[in-house]
Length: 142
Ligand code: B12
Image (cartoon, rainbow, N blue to C red; front, side, top):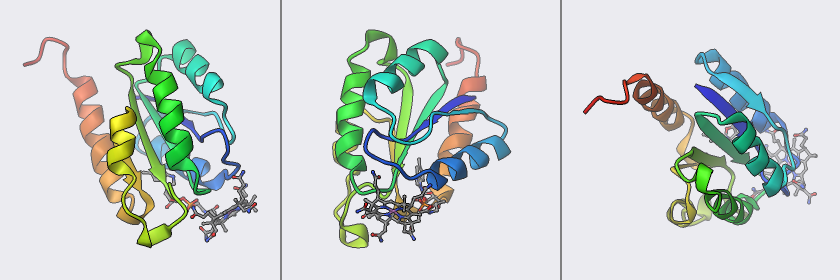
């Protein structure tokens, strides 16, 4: 798959993005990494320009749930991006392991999947394997 990796607008951390890029490349995917502090409008413009198969959003500064919800609503507002697969993960709030899950709200806002830091990376790997298999299926498959 062609995968776009990005952070949200407020988040300046970068090693999370490098980690995800390496993981995805090791799994055979082609990655464009937009880096940290990506404004919503830039992400939307790059999605329209590159038409990736999957967008992976990462945030660890604690504002990911808030920034992510705003960003995905903006992205889903573009008619051409309504069907684009977009997932988010990382340390999405400021309450750490005590936090209630941000998953339901972020799914409601428009993400296809949410991978909170506490759930580890195995679930994300499984999701990627399933997503890749689906992309290989012919369009007419039942
Ligand atoms: C290095 C670091 C910094 C560096 C970043 C340098 C750089 N070039 O990236 C600097 C000093 C700049 C920094 C700044 C800040 N930081 Co900082 N930083 C860290 C630190 C020590 C390590 C982060 C790191 O690089 N980890 C290595 C990467 C590979 O791992 P990771 O980020 O944890 O990501 C993993 C998972 O989260 C997961 N993951 C992440 N994204 C995704 C996405 C998907 C889809 C999936 C499946 C998984 C996934 O996979 C990764 C690998 O396991 C952490 C504390 C810690 N020990 O984690 C704090 C930490 C992330 N920082 C924190 C904070 C608060 C800040 C600041 C806001 C501090 C401040 N008051 O200024 C600022 C951020 C400002 C901003 N605008 O964003 C907090 C966040 C708190 C929270 N979320 O509840 C942390 C957790 C420290 C703490 N315990 O309080 N930071």
